[in-house]
Structures are given as C-alpha cells and as structure tokens.
Length: 114
Image (cartoon, rainbow, N blue to C red):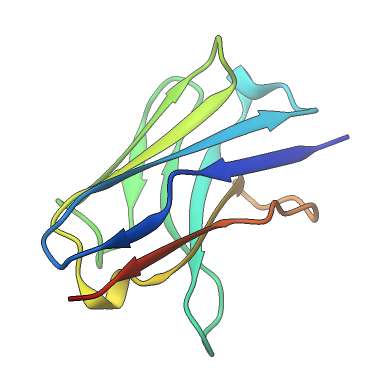
C-alpha cells in the first residue's frame, strides 16, 4: 500500500527555517519522482518542489531560492529545507509522487507568524 508520512512542521517566525521530512512506502522509491505540495486554507493544493530519482530538482517560482528539496533513496525519505519563510508559506505540507497518487498522508502544518 502506498503511504506517505510527513513530519517536521511547526510554528516559526518570518525569516525562519524549517526542515520537513517524508517517509514513503509501497513505491519503487529510487525510481520515483517525488514532490512536496502545500495547501493553504481556502486554496487548492499546489506543487512547490519536485525531485527525480537522480536528484534533478524543480521549484515553484514562489519558493525558488528559498526552499531546497532532497532525498535519501536508501531511507526512502524526501526532505524539504525551507528558509526565509514568509507569512504566505503558511499551509499544510504534503509529499507525494509526481504526478500525485490518490493516497495522501496527513500532512504537516507549517505556520509562519510573528
């Protein structure tokens, strides 16, 4: 069964940093393109970053230069380092395949507030 378990969210001040982790199971992880998505209240879920099995990355314009996605294929884990956080980064963050599988994890809440 495909499963994703996100962790690492929290409350942070503007300009701060957080590192999210996501453990995946039930997939051929090392061959899979993985993505980090987020959903803010009242908004649609959006893709913010993706990474191929070989480590090629791409980012939404809104996070480019501030966020960094990485992965550990041996541990079947994908990370999202978030720096210079802004109020508008507040959202629930999810990881999933790219394109996304129907199964979603619970996500991890990131709140940027002073």
